Length: 322
Picture 1: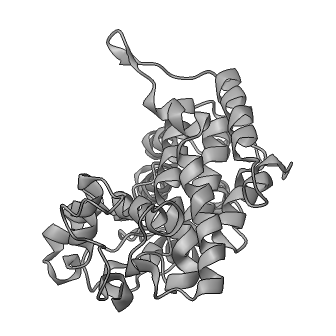
Picture 2 (picture 1 turned 180 degrees about the vertical axis):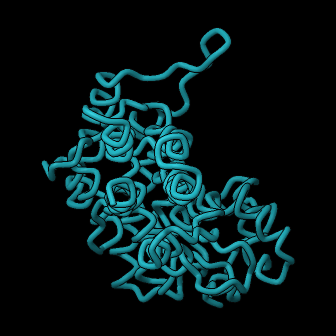
């Protein structure tokens, strides 16, 4: 490595956005360094999966990269447009896969398992997307969810297989679109992932089905149930459970690379019970081989690792060397 500029380019290639943003003004000068730091802040938000701020202004970032980030953005008000990740979760899952791969290469295994956990929480919504026509937008739920004979969102119903927390979340999701922005954001912080699991329970695990899923045509419902069942199973795999490692001393247990791979192999075996789950056993070239294939099968649509972080790093390298 010959020069300070070469060091900055290497930091960009490693997605070390925080370090690059801090060093750039010292090497490139204040004006150009601040432009680079602006792009680094944008990249760091994506790497940290800060979906609330994916649409934040970043003038030094090309419009195409900003547009792709907005596709993964979670709207902060009921009427915000575009709908981003509430319109479709496919771009967001592409970003999740890219983040998982980057964290794996950097051996940042705690944030990597956190990204896997996020993917598990919302995977049922990816399964429901073809039926809903959106990715679980509370402003666009089908009327059939609350049709006569449905127990969806009825708090305290003893025949419903939802937990009390899920019943509360489901009750809220049916009316949160009428709440102000503060209530909308609080709902997404605390309850939306529970709604995802509750929907999957309705279609795949309910022991006393009500009318909540009657809006899905019977042939489509069988396919949806199969994919939702795998989404629920993924959330209970050894890989996802790594996120819940017990505290050790004054910190938290961080799995080693070997422990992650071993947990994923056990997860693949656990999922390999049906044609959808068996896609996790494919060797698709991903660090956790089969994960993109599994997400694609659950989504009934191609879900591939994004190149958003890679393209941000390429843009940073061009800025540094121009």
